[in-house]
Length: 327
Length: 288
Image (cartoon, rainbow over all chains, first blue to last red; front, side, top):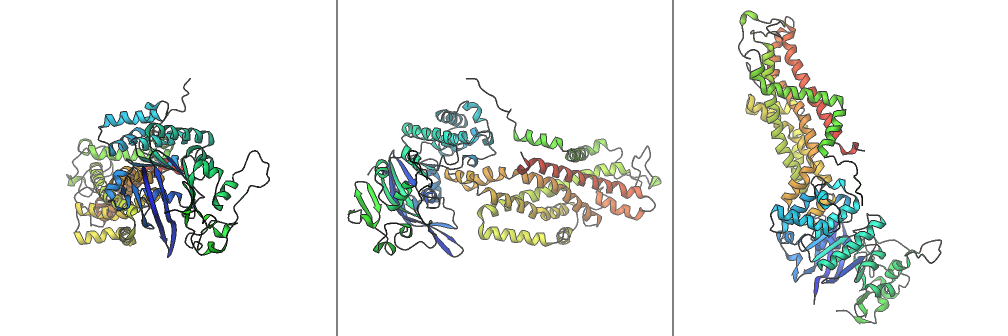
């Protein structure tokens, strides 16, 4: 109980030229109210597809959610009509995209865009919406917010645009904010500022956050709980401290091992051998087994069940099969 | 903290205008277009004689003080007829291009945005229209509807729809992959808003360019049709029709054919130069 979002066995597939790409192959996780949930994994493992599936923005064709449920505040989003879904997008669930440079409509002023969004979901007249927009810009610490309201997106820097995006997305006080690699396109100092801002806004507005990233540093800094994704499935899920101290799944261990450390001099960086599998022909059994250093008998033909190694720490791997079965 | 003012923020319009001003050919084209529109609007006040009243005793007179551009076969003042001809040309251009602009843009937007079978259907239809060689399509439409000013405008309009549809569709296809369209969906915008508040305004540059360039093509088509006797009928002072009547006197009074011919050439050139210049100054790829 107390969970805001509950995703069960979500399967999203893409169909292209006769092939079926299983982008999400039975993804389950939940997000509690007020928590920051991190989704980490390599490029192409299905993080962004998860985000788009939650908002039901998977382009069809070629993509389709074929199975599973997305329970958001007790309602299954997959059963809602398109116009009901539209009133949830931006109002109850918002999303910040990776590329702030292209996420704003280039032909309208910032103020007009903010006003439009606010009026789309709240019954406010133009001047009240404009005040609200200005207030939001000030809340995300945009200096000279009056002037920014009158500017076009191309006149702002990347960091400023991402702040504007955050202000816009939070202007309707959503229950859930999905941040899809919100800092990847920004340089390091701006990254830190944006992360600090997201943290601060979460505290002020009590918004739950689904943070998608491949940056483990960002995860460690921001999240309460973390799920590690590999090839369309979640392989491990745990509290942030636990997963950094005691990664269980061989893939997580590999990822963690690949973090370069400042205090050790090394010529080459550690890597996980092999490559990400082709999702139109994923390996049978555990999808990680061809690259796994610990693989043994059952790994190549049966999908490992999810076992709980300690409270809240879930792993999908045969190495921990003796533990308590989860659900 | 001292506020550091960066470069003065210039609006996009001002920026386009600045670039356009540096392009001499475009400015000349723009001037011709401006003059043409000015003359067309003020025709009844600036023309020295009524366009359709001639003095048969002054047939085919060369340019003189009374008749600056001479007179035609029925003794009508050429200057007045060319001035009134500008009116008709402008009317044809505006109506025909407007028809093409509205229908073509809508078809292109809807096709490009929704894709699939509908898009396929629209674009194949456009391909069929484009497959007709040039003026032949307009002739076929006139053949069905019959000659006359209204049908001429309709024919020239239909003939220009595919160009608009294609350009807008292309622009929408590339725009709809952009993140701000996805972001618009993510904040709950509906399709209608995405089409008219996001896709259309961002496609304005190619639409404006196409509109200007199309003005030239439509004028050429319309006067061509009138020249062939399929468009505006004499005695209306349409340039193509004037040219057609003057053809018979090419040897004896060449100025009668030269005047409307030059008018057509100048205006077509004006729109083309202006349109090309607009394209250069609106095209983001050429920006620094």
